[in-house]
Image 1: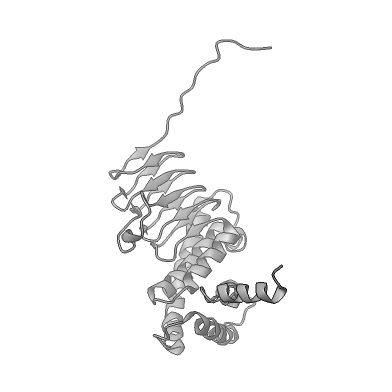
Image 2: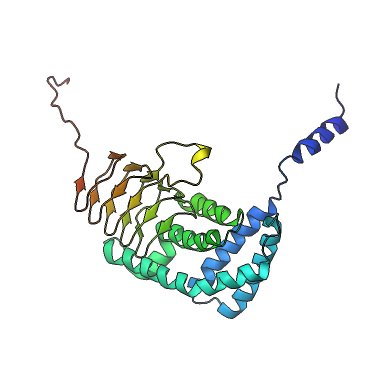
Length: 264
């Protein structure tokens, strides 16, 4: 019978293969929440919180920066410069949601209660870090938002201003997806790839959605060459793998048959 020491030694040996420090995950989630509250909570002291956020970021970046390619201070300063613009764009996103959702009673409700807005906010934070070539942290931030909202937005996606996500649950937006301005997306929408292959890593695999497009629930749009033209409306449950010209309406027509016999 194998001894306890033998089992422990085996576990330790296998743990060496991917060297994981799970504190990075938990600390990144804390950093993400604090960043959101700093920008939106009226009771949060911005000056004090920015100092704490810098300390927290330095700590998680030290864990994530395996190659030591960039200094922590340089990265933080570059990210900090982006925060006013990020906040400005998020205020525009929130107003877009309020202006177009009849269920929204105030813009404050959007900030506090809308999972779609929270998902957009964390995307905008993580996207800026992604552009700075930060390892792991942007993806951990997006996956945290995914776990909280049911919305999976890869930090590499490019999303313009006035973005509207309604209901949020089940939305997937891939890494090379490009979404322009004033786009509305409803629950269950997938903007994905036609196929998955490691050789396609540096290729555009996900669709482009032009200005003023509305995509209704459970629509699936796939492929890097697929473009949804501006001012188009994509109906619920459609499956699209080729481009749609501007000003189009695409919808799924269910087949309806009357029962020939009614059982009482």
